[in-house]
Image (cartoon, rainbow over all chains, first blue to last red; front, side, top):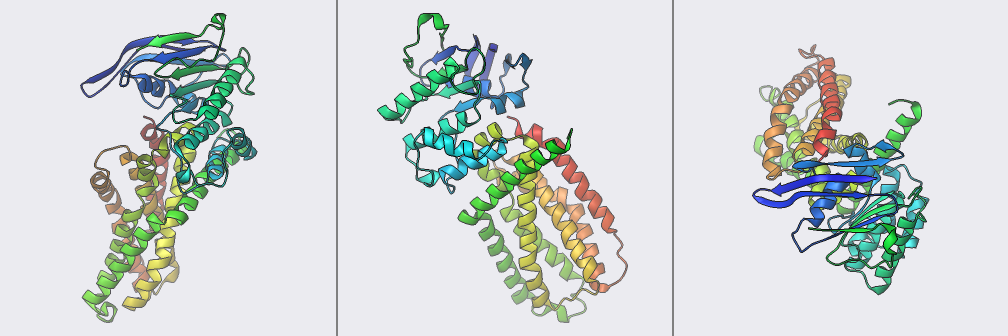
Length: 210
Length: 229
């Protein structure tokens, strides 16, 4: 369960978040909508533990235990435009490094590169924008997180890539992803428009507009 | 560490950071080129400006100072890249999401250490050859290089981590690093002079090891706070 309440954040004199609250339960999707600069990315970075709010709290429990900020940061799957990789390393070398750093077998890297259909030997610096987005998904899902935080997940993707993302997200929410746990995974998606997953109203998905 | 397996896990994760840093460095050669260029140009300048300084007894006390200044400034030209590069290329975000801070720091420290020792292996033989400097106590000389090189790398890694997210990183790095390294340099020069003259050192090598330990432990304690947003 992810709960955040009264989150506020400003950058200098520019106020971005002014007391946003929300709750996401297993199997649920929270869509964050808003114009450019409304604070969608800032909210996701706070939820990921990459940024500290000026005010408010974030609580995230796994297996009934609250995770600290550092634990939460390493437990989430995070996809965002500011997530970059080592350009001199190949896609496979990048994922293998992060797999070792997370204590995962290196086969996880190969498995997820195949899943997102990326050429393993191509240098990350030579990947197209859409390919980099696929690599971000492989990075985020490789550790099979229960909480996914996706900032503009279909940006730069072609129709095939966008379909892949919808499939991965639907699997995650339904508990089909191996790491999503009982009741399915949780996801927060920041997008300029609702991401149509064709989910029924009783799924409990909700929208936060900034 | 609560158990042996936790420690082995920590070593594996730190080793992953170290291996990644060397792999990217060997492909980009940014830090290696900076270190080598600075060290080589400084050696040539010293040699041409001072002539065969080793032949003059009056110049002998200066040589350890020159050696450590070359090592210090060459190291500061390349070592900050360990963290600053991660922030500039935005790879620090993935690193924060994937790795425990202690393992990241240990891996980065390992990289800085190996780079510093590589620098010493490159510079010191050339310096000895160009200045006709011959230590009468080679054991103490090597121990000084190892212990003071460790302190140089550990101090640089800690300060690089502290300034990586700041604006004006270059200036801040120098402002914070130099006061931290002054005691180390004083001890390094004293020990090197003792190794060259063969006389008992006025500074014990254990003092340098104490300094190394303090900087390393301080780094592990401070780094999680520095690494957090």
